[in-house]
Length: 361
Ligand SMILES: Nc1ncnc2c1ncn2[C@@H]1O[C@H](COP(=O)(O)OP(=O)(O)O)[C@@H](O)[C@H]1O
Ligand SMILES: [Mg+2]
Image (cartoon, rainbow, N blue to C red; front, top):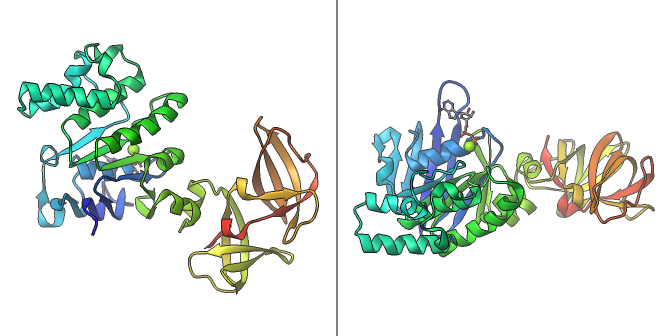
């Protein structure tokens, strides 16, 4: 069996009466892997992370790090944060302004009473990993935001924590830097051989960084899986829409046909969809589909439906169409530098059944 570094079991955190901030969340992180918790603001990502770090006292559940119970409120177990051996990187660059880059990275090591020579070597290794060795003697405040975040990362790496916790570490950086640093981050965490829990609201960040992605909403962990699984077999309508299947088509199940269900939209217009949960004829369903998976054609195609282009937006390398299909509105994205259809055009739409996911309405 695969070794597990973090084991979160039925974690609950209630701040006051009302909906718990974290509601029965369970997941495991295999040793050496990166798990990303993805979800909108307020869904409970930071609270989950803080419970793992020991900065928040859970209401119920258990947390194990390296097989050791560090939190079990109902048994009165709560290991202090400094004894959990976790490293943390936050959204704000938590670097000490009055220190050099090297001193910042060395700080937690000196604090642990490690001898000078060993500290020097570990600091050098960590700075090398984040590609900041040549900045070692600069004041930390002379660095750019992206560099400061790498200093914070190096500081967390230098003492080799059992698990690295990262809370939206890229969200204060500009878009271009964010793209570059997210790929760097994965490489650095992997090279350091660390196990990591990373939280973000940004789906593209989650896909690039995570070995596993867990999608959260309203305190609940809805689905945990490899990025490809989250993107190709979303088990929940929220997971589908949050990861980009933003169109919702409403209809009624007619029957089951092989792997697909036939769903009637209106006036006899039928589409095929994959339903991961059990649905039966007559049941109302919502079909989630990505704007880039809908195919528009000028002429009728097999299984196509007549639709009308309401409006379009030309974005240079792609065109977004708003189309009307039997009274419902869908967004369609087409790559290419030339829009193919005009506003008002009567065209046809084909939906790939394997990319149409039905959920009980
Ligand atoms: N210290 C706190 N006191 C009361 N409510 C809190 C506290 N921290 C977080 N919450 C609430 O818990 C929920 C989850 O918050 P949080 O974990 O910060 O979400 P996320 O990090 O996903 O944006 C939110 O409704 C938030 O308002
Ligand atoms: Mg947060």
